[in-house]
Image 1 (cartoon, one colour):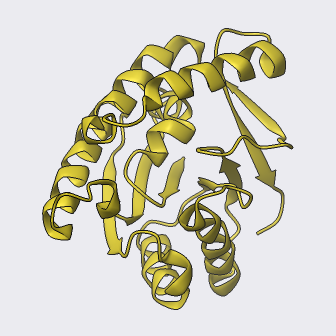
Image 2 (cartoon, rainbow, N blue to C red; image 1 turned 180 degrees about the vertical axis):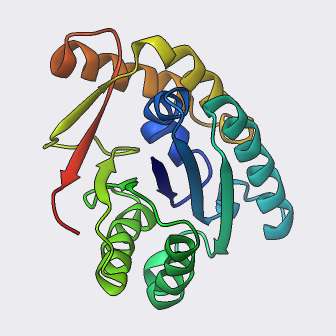
Image 3 (spheres, rainbow, N blue to C red; image 1 turned 180 degrees about the horizontal axis):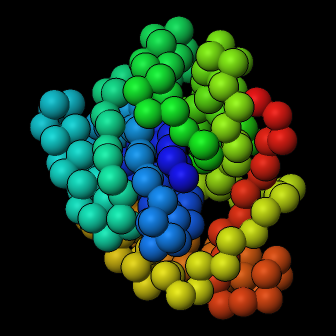
Length: 207
């Protein structure tokens, strides 16, 4: 199976669905992650090009741990994905056409970050434009979902997921994302899956 993850910034893929990606890789699926931006605003003390280099290098470290086959960096402007949707859609169409995905994961539309919300709209636009019919599923990053349809037991790979999240060392000065995601996935495991750790997804039955 070809699995494509659409991530607005480096670290969203690890936080939102890193465990599921590792499970896909362990099953022999091909996993690609496309980053809409390189999260340059996450390092405000650096010039944008230098910040992109740091965050992309961290993404490459995480990809090794998660078994990701390919990374694509579109390098649109951090925080402004929603202001450049035509360009983002065009670039993402190229990614879909190069290696047509059978399953696409992306942030859910009720996320608080504007780039996360825009990513959901962009993915749906791409599938409509191309007439593509992959399985679509939204994941949670900053904002827990109020409704979900699918639960992935990631207990066996949770340690690997946390290691992947921790490769994003540049983002840990103000917030411990590893602690946050460990708590959320433990909560989902306890209440949604009756297991130690889980990730949840909102499925879209038609593209």
